[in-house]
Length: 337
Image: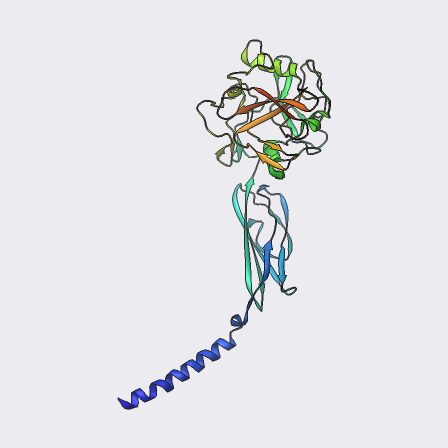
């Protein structure tokens, strides 16, 4: 028994020496934490199979010798190495993650994850509900196709204008403009020109031969939907529900639900809740709840008029906002032959 207890301290010492030797030879024990934080921009929305450039930065120490590895499962390649890389968005719509890991032999690794939603406006499984017509035009400026429908004396676009020569996409997410269209200030939309008269609006941001709808154009449209005369200043009770479409994006309804506006779209006008912007495109709001569309008419020298639909109300009333401060959607019209 005495011999046994006498050997125990020696055994413990040998064990500690061996453990200490292993720790010293392990490079991880001498690692330092990187200074700074990884940063890279990934759009919240991407069009399926579009190309996206990714560049990571933010680490201030070490200043060299860092390896950046991207985990891009679904993006054409599962992984890729480099501080700046180009990848192709997944072909299948859905939610995806991109992970970048920074490694260095003398430092602890740093990791950052960003998420994005891939949409495919050309696929009915991703974007559906809008009613297409047999009539369409091609915008010569960018090749965009717009379907239109005749309401009494006028042809109307049945989707929002998405020309990128002016305005901004919602939250500056370019991919969303393919679904929602662009948001424009009244001054951009009309070219700063207020007009009246049926079919007499300014071209503004519309394609050649098309124009912003005047008060009279809107009245003609509302009256055609109701089946009896309507004034521009009226509330247009029930017309909002007849104009709004229960569109779906990646399996989710674009409009919030309300029993007071069932989004019947029996007019085929395809109104969607594209939201709005304020503060000269510095703030975006109202997506999934409101749709706003400019009129070529002005309330006064500072304010332009628009019509809007709210998810919780079946009306299609009008209001006005500052000509440069507020951003809304655009529908283009022309006299029917």
